[in-house]
Length: 274
Image (cartoon, rainbow, N blue to C red; front, side, top):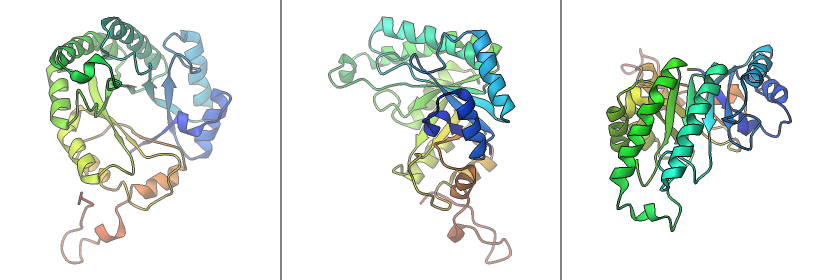
């Protein structure tokens, strides 16, 4: 399993050269870069600039495996405003092209829940929003396929895609391997719930994001993900927040209490959700 460090978690950095150096010094071979209108990389960054960024990371021995497109809470593919959805679709299509230039594998896309007071909170037209979301994702397929890129919607989105069944249904309706999902796993998340999401989403899962940069290291706390990956349920990038690659590898090892030799008391036990 290849660990990809979220570039935002390595801040502060004043340049991509600083970020590439920081990632390499922390032991990571790959990074995820943010794409926002305020970041150094935007949906309008030109081709030559992208090639310069790619060269900078290549020189440091670090690849750009993932991008995360955050267009703001009011601009996403399930926004209540039709014009906001149009703008989000346009900017995501532009971001796909930038991801292609940077040779990324996955572009993650936020799917913000409606803010309190937003008419979508009452969700009288949630089915229509989901249907429109499907159509927009399908229009992104040719661009994503052209760059051999997976577009990953971030879930759960409590109002629209609150559980793995509804999330899987959306992807099944789109019916394209280049459109998938990304789950966010924090220390506060329940391991058995996260494992269930991974298991049920299967091939639909394009990326998993683990942890927070400020967390202390706990041996094997994310070890439940390994047997699911070993069974090829999930084979996408595992994006982590800050720290050292060696620490993350320790955090993803089976806890000692769940890993025993195969010749002692039967077959070796894999970490499973409680």
